[in-house]
Amino acid sequence: MPVPKDFALPARLSAKERAFEQIQKWIIDGTLQPGEKIMDAELAETLAVSRTPIREALQLLEIQGLVSMSPGKETRVKQIEKDDILTLYPTLAALHALGAEHAAQRMSPDNIEQLKKLNMQFGQAIENGLPFEAMETDEQFHNLIIELSENEYVASFSASLQIHIRRFKYVFLKEKCHATKASVEEHEALITALQQQDAEEAAVRMKQNIIRPMHDLYHFIQ
Image (cartoon, rainbow, N blue to C red; front, side, top):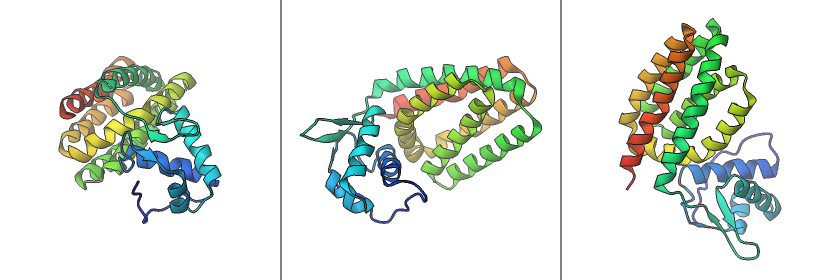
């Protein structure tokens, strides 16, 4: 199970939290491949922690559905299935459309400027071929809108779905960056609707921004 040696650990986190975040990232970006066997001893050595926080991190990842653990046997990265895309994305689109509808009535000029800045950073990451940065900035853009919706259930369910969608999205951004430029324009249209406090239009634009990549990704994956 080859893992990188040159990576930066997050600061001021517990050993379990550091292990959890790093292993999760490796699963999302494909460093740890679907179906790959995870060696907790190797991870412990690589991350410079004991095996206990590694096992605790893996238990959290199992709850998230990113790994499968067989007690006393082995732990493997959970497989991802192409048809999962057609279930995950429409569910997220519905949640985020509702979030955008609610957020439209709560937008301040400062919020609009934040969204414009994030969208600019998103576009720059795509142009510079930085898929993970693009993915994270895109999530920040969407999550700000969800936060402003002030709907804790939308936020909670959305976060759970995004964990799995990130695995698909990373492959999409990494292998097909040029196609995601359409997302920048969709974000601009969404920002305009939010700025005008047009809840119905914001919901439509948000849903479009999530569903279009779903079709592109589904046809891209073999």
